[in-house]
Image (cartoon, rainbow over the protein chains, first blue to last red):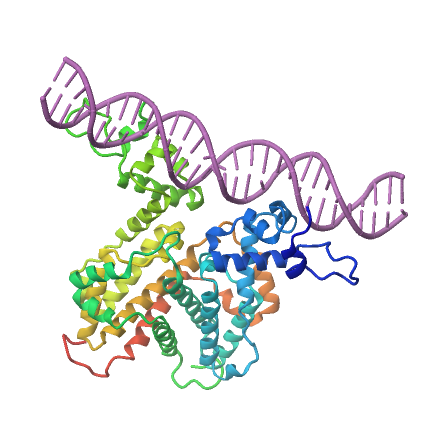
Length: 237
Length: 237
DNA sequence: AGGAGTGTTCTACGACGTAGAGGAATCTGA
DNA sequence: TCAGATTCCTCTACGTCGTAGAACACTCCT
């Protein structure tokens, strides 16, 4: 079969050094994963199959198996790709206070998750060992240690921010795993009737950003109370 | 086909009034869902198929479709069943302070999620309109209003506790969506080498319960700072 | 020319969700 | 008593899925 146009043009690794070999390695692990991630983001995770991915790549589905042993490995690659978007500037300007460091991390995590809502279940269910995240953890422990937190506390804080962010992302972004949610209006009617105070409170509308910020700051405030009161030097008190 | 023993004995609706009609409705929506939830809990969500569920029920897979229009509806039923386990005693003893009310809610949510780890992605991705949860929301708004929180704040607080709990449950419970995690040890080695301070902090071990409680109390402490200082409006603090 | 990679395709298998038609048992009304 | 109607379940079949296994076409090395 003649190489599909989509391939020759947009995707694969570069023709090494001469123009007379345009076609050889049409695929690559990275390009497959990039294409798959686009499919997930645009069509939904349910529409990602090895066969459809092959079609998108202009290639027999089985060609993918040369680069990835199975679909699970493809998923791993997707999660990896999402985490790779988290780029904390480890020595950046924002690091002047421990608090702004953590806020920047949390917000960026939230932003990245927001770009790939269909990846959430997969992202949420595996442990985070990407260099970006580990590097951030290292820095956070150091920086928090400097202002009086124990290593234990520092880890807990980072973890709590992470889990809160992930949980909040679910609440905001997810279409119910396979089906659309019941209509807002009809549910609202039931609520108004049976839960009047709740209905009043809801009437203000749901503002995910505001709520997220409130939770984020509350978590930070709460942990700050654990610090030794005026502790200035190293691990004090 | 003769009715499978598993059916006649353990599950379905009662033979109405006489012993001579053993056979009528062998199945029921509730029994199907209960069985499916057991399968999910014991074998994992990946092992739940309509065919295997039919086999477990001793019935042709298509029989299920008399009670549930499709697999999505089965999932809906499963989520519903999980939420139904959340039974806040709305007028219970624990309600003496707003704080203990919220703590009880959060802990119970966590407990229920912990019983059905494989349900997490499904539970996390759909909005919560079960009576138990709505009823709790109503009460929380009232009780928090009485001590000075606005309705908006009350909702945010409840939501933040919920999302934190869900996020934390993911971190604790989930096997990566389809594959086992990389071995703890080999990862630990890498961490120790490249992220020494982080490694020190981790050395204490991961204690999910401790971490969860820390986050929970921090979130509550943080929100408490938002209250009007000595607000005595209602039944007092 | 002839092998040894390398990258892709072809074919096929078993499992999946579920549509559609067809039973068999029971209930209803005559 | 008996003929529909109703209720509950089974059989068969279709299209889709992940992927094993073999075969094919190129390029490179000798």
